[in-house]
Amino acid sequence: MQGPAVSAAPFAASEPSVDVVLAHLAAVPPALFSLRQSTGKLAVWAAELAVRLMSGQRLLVAGNGGSAAEAQHLTAELVGRFHLDREAFSAISLHAETSALTAIANDYGYDEAFARQVRGHGRPGDILMLLSTSGRSPNLLRAAEAARPMGITTWSLTGPAPNPLAALCDEYVAVEGSNASVQECHLMAVHALCAAFDAEVARLRGPATKGGGTP
Image (cartoon, rainbow, N blue to C red; front, side, top):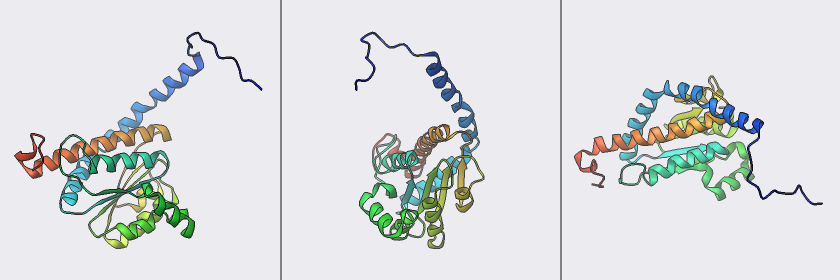
C-alpha cells in the first residue's frame, strides 16, 4: 500500500505546528530563570571540581536517555577541552561503558548498572554527578547510595525538587519545568560549569595558562 503522495512544492508550516514550536520555546525562559537561581552553586561546583581533578581525583557521571547524552557531553569537555587548551582530566561516563553496562544489567539487574561501576571505579575524594529530569531513576538512586560509604561526593542535576535523587545527594541543582525544558537547561548548566571550570583551572595554574597554552 502506497503512502500519501509527496508534493514537489515547498512545504508550508501548518498553524498547529507553529503553535507547538512557539509553546515549546516559550517554556524555556521560565526553566532558565529557575536555573539562574543556582548560579552561585554551579560556580562553587566548578571551583571544587577544578581542585579535585587537578589533585588527581576523577569525576564519574551517569544518566539515562537524554540525560546520558548530557552527562557524556560533560565528560567529553573535561577529557578534551572546552575553552582552554589545557591538560586532560579524568572524567568517566558510566553509561558509555556498554559492555560493562550490559553485563552488569544482565547479571544483577538494570538498577545496579551504575552502582557496581561506582564501587569499581570510585575512590575517596572523587565526585559522582548524576543527571535526571525526574530525580526518580532507580539506577541513579542506587549509584548515589553506593557512593556515600566510599567517601565520594555526590552531586545531581535534576528536574523539579523535592525529589528522591536530590535528597540522596550531597548537593543538587534543580530546574523547574517540563522534562524537555529541564534537559535543555541541563545542557546550559553543563556548559556553564565547564566554562567556570576552565576559568578556575587558569586561575590556579597562574599566568602561564591564560594565553591558551598548556604549562
